[in-house]
Each structure stands twice: as structure tokens, then as C-alpha cells.
Length: 76
Ligand SMILES: [Zn+2]
Image (cartoon, rainbow, N blue to C red; front, side, top):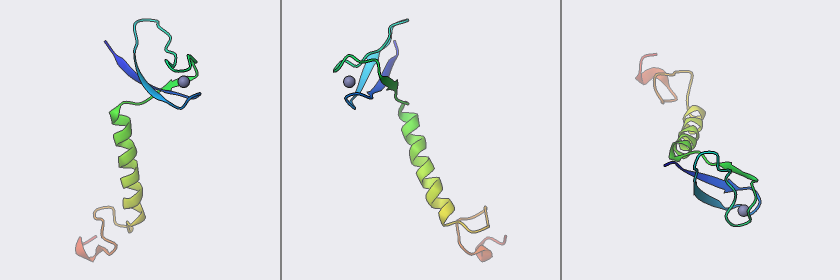
């Protein structure tokens, strides 16, 4: 059975909920349905990857084959 992670917009809490069929998830703390489903661990991983990509491209030269600022080392 799938367990999903949610974030409550009202009380800013994360919680996990087992969703069965057409159950409408609500926050167990404040009972609102003003919540959204969090991405799985993969989502957090890709966030990290995006950060790394940003850092990498900031230090990158026109050469896409290496991360060096000078292309003399890779022959491009
Ligand atoms: Zn809540």
C-alpha cells in the first residue's frame, strides 16, 4: 500500500499518510485539505543535482568536455 508524504500549507508540517483508494488526505494536525504531496526521495536528490549543476556551470568555460577553466588540458 502506498504511503505518501505530504506538506500542510496551514501548519507547515510534513506528514505521511497511507492513501487507500479515493481517500482524500487531510492534515492530521489541523484537518485541512490545504496540503500538497511531497516528492519522494528522488525529488530531493534531483534538487541536489540541480545545485551541483549550477555550481558546475558557473565554473565552466566554453568547453563542455571538461570542468577546467582552461581547455589546454583536454585539447578542445
Ligand atoms: Zn496542518
